[in-house]
Image 1: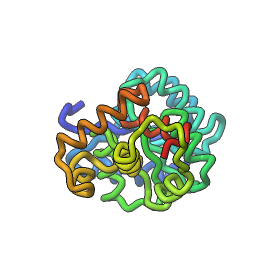
Image 2 (image 1 turned 90 degrees about the vertical axis):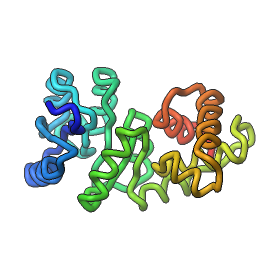
Image 3 (image 1 turned 45 degrees about the vertical axis):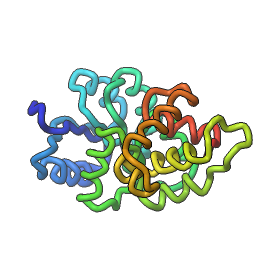
Length: 209
């Protein structure tokens, strides 16, 4: 495996979609896609032997669902990020996926360039979501009175949930990158988490935004 490339695996039961995704990924010099699976059972058994950087996971699969697959694989592949790629927009699927350990949630009609950018974002610590999904997630948040976060920290966390990186957050809030890093460090400490993905999941599960 070329260590300079992002290694991606796909779990998708539709052979045409699986092949198309493989072609998109292998068509970029920054990515490679060597191992693909048509169901979760094969992925759970075989993926740990060939750990990828990112797994694109469908939800509706024969046998175990993609959400169940993420939950099982997250234990076996702690260093792998999971990006849900599905036709489902409903709130329950989004929240169950994130709670199971998924880092991002994209619709299957996501343009190829956006898909590749999202995979890069996941590897770099982001939590990308298709705009319709992000709107659903953000519209469901209700700030709780006992949130440990300050107003500015909550604002930063919302942008993390939207998949933004340090620079875009800093630009949007008219602050320096060091200030954003300080806010994120404080968020991690207050929420008792160690990564963006954990912070996003905790924010969703506890309605902190």
